[in-house]
Length: 216
Image 1 (cartoon, rainbow, N blue to C red):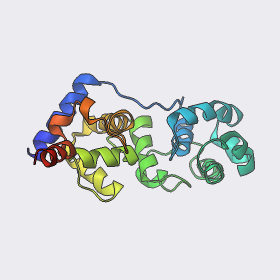
Image 2: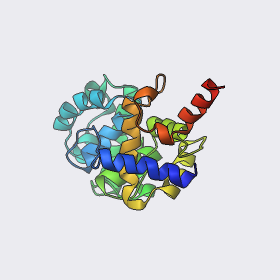
Image 3: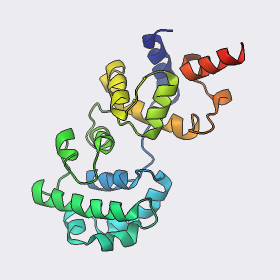
Image 4: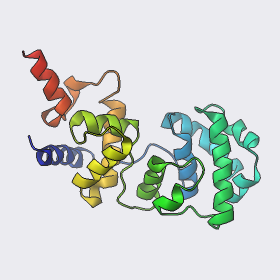
């Protein structure tokens, strides 16, 4: 199977079965989305959605969050992973938005990644979800599933992002982020991939290779 055929099969399946995928994070504007995505690092969306309503009621704008201390913010986010670091990053991010960006979340990779606590993955989520740009965010699920399927052969998230960007049409790129992420969250799990119930088996490099081993 060629790489082109693999991509065509996977993308066609997702377009037919999940035409309008979206994030499971709850948000109302670019700032609340940025807060949620920053909190979601190595944490479940379900947990983040439990935390953000009270946090954003207390600090609904960058200016309000910038005026708080990291300790104040910690009180609201202590149940997420790495709460000390995240509370500090949120305060510093809000301060920078207030001081350098007029209280607005920027819409370029360079400016987003200049914010404390914002890496390339978070920036790509913001570009795609908040600003409708052709971005592919590579989290742990997208990294794992893309390599297993054979869509990429990358040792780093950036290598996987570059491979996906080369082969996925611009208008499908951010949808593809959601498709692959959700597939990894619910089907192609890290420890126990549900291969028997996976509809992507015909195009999956990992499944094909394991079957050939079993058949020897």
